[in-house]
Image (cartoon, rainbow, N blue to C red; front, side, top):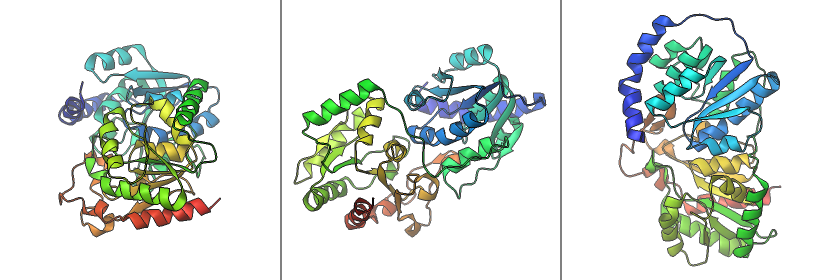
Length: 371
């Protein structure tokens, strides 16, 4: 199923199914032998679930903990070693039906913020179900947890597992573990581009996921910033993006005075995790690679306007979320927990245009001088 079909089914059919299923909900004694965590969408959000999984594993070291996810984000969990099995759905009705028939769990923790599909799955495979308290889907859960949209999503996900009486907190994200062959590939790639360990390697992601394009900062300004970092800091610049962003990055580089490297299409997802970990600094729109950089303990700068860095900023004490959305009465116009990723209501992206090259460069200077 494509994204639009999934959203249509989830919105118009999912609510009705949730209302029916609540009638048949039964209370069961809570056991912890088999636990399922559901996270289906978004590489960034998937990375933000890992501290909650750390907390689960620490509390229940002998429990079987499985992940239900999709091909879009499974690579994150392939770089995480504290779970037992990764179950992959293609979100077709047949795939969902097969999973429901074959699997049963003592506890299901639904990390999805608004999808009805995940709550319906939790009803059929879980004896005890935990999820967020907003919307009709919450009627299916045995334990409902308030989604506090005033704090970071890492902490919101931790609230789900804290509802089991787990005491756990963290100031940093969980590092993604890459394979030996991926490390070797990235070493060869950097050697090919004559990048040395002593170089000031700065990564930049100028693109965003297709769900909300209004998060993009002006491409010409990315070019200006990259030139400034090369001229003032003698940095080596690599641009990181998905294969379909190669043309976009080529455009940015064409606007530069200096040379830069386009790695879009040269790495798979897990290799990109390793590539980003080699950077000394990473600059990104509000999108997946920003969270990868924060998880890999790279100093990270995230650019925000339609969304709030208080919710989705690069998590960690050395990272900075730059936000100018306060100038727009509609910001935040992205509210993931409400399923709202609508386009800019003013249609001029004023919140992102307000962010200046100098503003970001000054933050770069500050981060690069700190140990």
